[in-house]
Length: 257
Ligand SMILES: Cc1cc2nc3c(=O)[nH]c(=O)nc-3n(C[C@H](O)[C@H](O)[C@H](O)COP(=O)(O)OP(=O)(O)OC[C@H]3O[C@@H](n4cnc5c(N)ncnc54)[C@H](O)[C@@H]3O)c2cc1C
Image 1 (cartoon, rainbow, N blue to C red):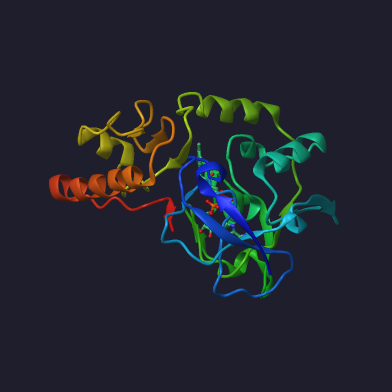
Image 2: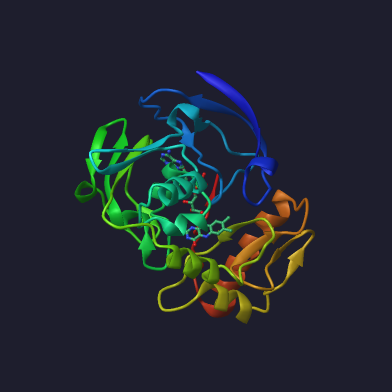
């Protein structure tokens, strides 16, 4: 298997992370010991991470067959959005504002509000073959898909809706512009993680060049060459204080490897 050196301080969306040797997967197969990374828009790669893998360019494709959208696991959200716009295909307009690859988006059931990747999904291909949507358990930002997502198909049943792109752009208007991983914690039941962070007095709080955003308390933002240690420190101390002072468990939405 081919490998390549990836510096996650450049590769990841938050521009923080270790440098690691990563396996490149060119063909469908079972690689039980490898941990897949998409574009690391939701993942922090620490020094302890090992056995990392990326799908190669062989899985970066999108097309239409039998009136279905067929998308490879390594295809970036921006490319999916451009294709849909060009070919007047609706339902995935929010991908204009959601970073990631098809594999990561499907695995996380990513989305914006009620617009989620599973809404119009038909099948997912892993090393076990093709799974239909009915065979998969999925919920808010979670699925039980095991193994590697090589491809997924989607129904085509609506035209591309430009007004939705505007809606999603507006929804993003007050999001921090600095590099981030999106929301760090899941919202506790009946509450908001951002509210919890704010009530601990941590909104805008920085350690080194990393901090809880002034604009959106549940976003950790990198003000420039922020360190991995400071990032991990902020996450764990915030969880500890939420538990000690408010009795609230803040569960991670991001993945720390
Ligand atoms: C500014 C910003 C805003 C964001 N806003 C949102 C939002 O509104 N809604 C939302 O849902 N998310 C949001 N996110 C998070 C992120 O966009 C999604 O989680 C996205 O799905 C991550 O895709 P990725 O390819 O980068 O996955 P990664 O972070 O690389 O991986 C995420 C998970 O998917 C797994 N995975 C990746 N590829 C595969 C594969 N081929 N097969 C099997 N497993 C795989 C990984 O092992 C990991 O468990 C935001 C992120 C940023 C930076």
